[in-house]
Length: 261
View (cartoon, rainbow, N blue to C red):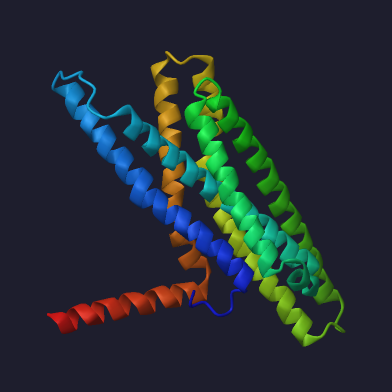
């Protein structure tokens, strides 16, 4: 919110991603850890009695898939937003209006709710649905970032070969280049965390009784939740103004604590 150089439309996308990542950490990761620890303790003590209400487990699973899907879709939408920014330049502000940005965000979260509903309440098809969504997401984000790289490279070649470009235009192109490269770092972290889920899901679907496939599948689910913890670190690392705002906020908090003591 304090980063003045980030456009308002992009800031909404960042806030949506930040909210989904924070919710994954506070809700999905925390509840999964509590439930898993409790089940392991009961199993080790020989207590096989069902402790958790199926409704509670269903709600926890639904929230987990909803938030993970929202984070996944946020990264995809940010990729295409950056693609439009480097491709359209001045026309970007006319095309990406606050109203259209709000529609995109509402659609994003609505799709996340619907997808999580299918995955949780249609268990016979949930892994197929997840695999299809992952595959489509990988293809879309990869195409977007390959296109971003080509557009940025083309504009940089223009800068070096045509001295008649105005300084303001040059600065805008360089700013968009930096923003696009920052988004690519987010994409690489996203790919590293989400890519293992597709092959592990396919292997687990072929043989659900194989222990190694079972472990690989749930380890890949852990990586997806880990991505939500890594995103804030990547944004603080790559965006100077966000990093400065975080540092300033942390210093103020410590200053308040020092006064209190």
